[in-house]
Length: 300
Length: 308
Image 1 (cartoon, rainbow over the protein chains, first blue to last red):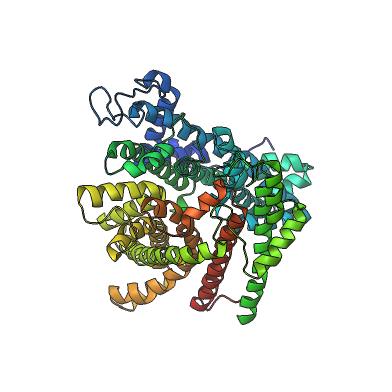
Image 2: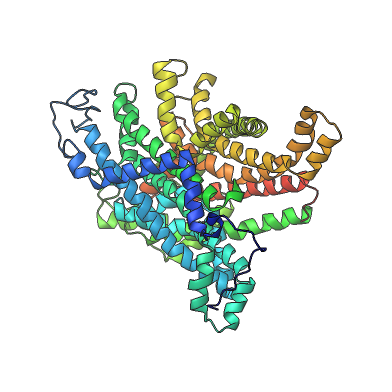
């Protein structure tokens, strides 16, 4: 296997240096991603948001719980750049801490979804049989559920809180990625190289980790990158309703939900977190679109 | 085709039954009950009173018995009294609010289809020119920004800054405009993106090349050959679209104060209103499944290559 035969070019032809370089799928994809301006912009905003979330303690001008009852409902001023809320808390500081919740849910919950969904999809696609049949039936039923309603149901069962949001999203979100992985495995396991590996004596675990998983990675990454904004949306929606993040921990969705009825009188309470959610969602969408186009240029 | 439709309708029953079972189990697996004095809106009751209430609502029986009773009654259209609105039956409440949601949803869906298809055509025909960017931009906005955020922006723009429409209510047609647009924008974006890529795919196909080669005018090529074929995959989208409009309606209805059934989604779940939760989920599931069936049949009617 180690011997690679080099096919000599036609006599006298000197190939330009760069064609000799082997470019991997990942390097190609990375280059295509960097060429996509919107994706780079989205990625930049995401990095910025992550930094804000990490450095919230240093960035926020006030602690997010610090209230001042003589200064409630203030409009933006020099002292409070985005105004104060019904308890006289600084809106900017609360939004900075809100970034922490959004990023944590977006990345963390999606990680859980991938960790549950991918192994299930791999096993079900590879082994087939009764397990697979049961799983696909189960997935069909899960698909029949309105996703958000089911999350709300689980949340009202578990109670509000960050950990429970992880659980609720993990519990309901793995279905899509499992289905995707399963479909990939079904087509890949019939390929000649898998047959070859099996003929050489590779066991199911080796086949799965060395061949099936790496080769179904592209659609998994694409699905996961679109799952992040979905998780952020779910948290915002849950907190908007009041079954998401527990106060006093601030979350953008919660700020919008609590203050939407005062929109006419105190627009600043609602508009700034709304902008934050919109910008975050757009950034992840641009970035996700870029990742998809970079990994699979045919899909564009 | 008739056989296929009947078969699908038959499969609807086990699906609904499975949905009912899952919802029932999740509901009852959670700590707390509607009689729990800690639950929202409940009175602190003496243990005897609680026992009597549990007996009255059948909550003291074993779970499997409760489920069987529920199914037997639901088949006859009886979902019982709401635990939260104690004087009204679930049937009454949904009968009053479902038509409102259906009306809002249909308007939004109609707008989404018309707008989405128009945007998609513009984007595809003027690929990589300014129309394309405008329509893709609008579509991305609709797809990625949650509708309760869009609602906030619309209220600020079109009823506070420019007082064109009221901030809420459901009396006169003028009050329908903002909720409909808000609800439509997401599905519209999805349809636009899908239409665009579907048309682009068709435009590159051989029969379009043939049509052009034989000298057909651009308008004829686009409307007669491209669109007809490009629409087929777009129709499949309509199934999930109903889901998006359905669940989205809660937020839009609550922000614009529309008296639809959206608010019962959440109220029933946080209030442990068992009969209401079951009815809402089943109504939604049945609606979705029937819409999916209609879409599938439509798909077959549009594309003669499809056999059932």
